[in-house]
Amino acid sequence: MNKKRKPNYKLRRIIARVIIALLIIAPLVIIFRVKIINAPLYIKYHKNTDVLNALFDAKFERKEVKEFMPKLEKKGMNSYTDDYIISLSNKGYKPKTIEYILLNFKMGDTKSLINSKYDKDLEKMLNNKLFDYKNYDRYMNERSDNEDIDRTILRVTLDLDKDNYSDTVEETDPNSLTAFINKHRYLNEDYIPDDLVDMSDDYANNYYGQLQLRSEAYEQFKKMVDDANKEDLEIYADTAYRSFKLQKTIYNNYVYENGYDKASLYAARAGFSEHELGTAIDISNGYLIEKGDPEYNWLMQYAYKYGFIFRYYEDNVDLTGFAEEPWHIRYVGIDVATKMHKENLTFEEYWIKYVNKKEAK
Ligand SMILES: [Zn+2]
Image (tube, rainbow, N blue to C red; front, side, top):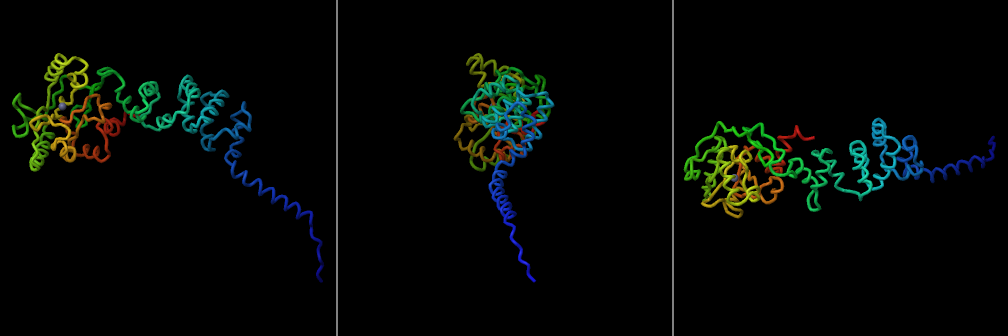
């Protein structure tokens, strides 16, 4: 026997309505899910803000909100930060950036950020490992439209925004092949490398006095020159090691003949010349080497294989503080020179990245 049951139209109608409602609600939930999940947090931390406003204005991801807000709360930051968060977020700053600003920036700097246009360099700045908020004013003073902000930070880190020979520090590891001397870093007046050797007339112009170099640099220089000679190139040292006393005489003569301003760019004060390290050489082919000389081109290509680098060229005048000197090479060892070559780093960049990394943030 087959008892026919009357269909339950009422139940079916309810089910149909639920399905239609779900079809409408589901996409909304998917689209606004982050905001909906965050709603309780927003309501908790945006006590003074309209909840709807918070839901639609704030762009934070859940993770950041969870980590970020309690940090602010711990620092005693209360409701006034709500407006700052919303303002900075509306300008386009990322949660990580906002977090950094609110936790580290002085109120005045935060307010001036809020009152000015979105600064795309700021996010880049905060991502730079060398960024230090202590130097924020200096970055802002130094930055220019045509300079990459990372370069500005590097320059400030190297104190190159300061006056020459101000805030100087002594190089405490002068024997190191990566000892770093510039207009803010000097060698002790009594430093004399203990492995200086006399250069033979085959490799040096000893006419004005016997030239000397540290032994490892000299051995490598000889190899390099021998190989260059095989290519019919003429290379010899015109200047090598200079004592503190000699550098003092040279600098004073330069000031006397050319004036202080020119001396500041072209010559180094005693204690501040790489030549006092015993690893720097001014090279000549009869005249000091210039850009475009075949010797220059050959060295540009091969010098690193012998451990030598050019130190002062057109593109890094802003990092060295010295005018370009195509004739000035410096021995840093094969490993360092090769790494610089491979990673396309200037000596300053190498030093910051690999030698000074303990001091960097
Ligand atoms: Zn030189």
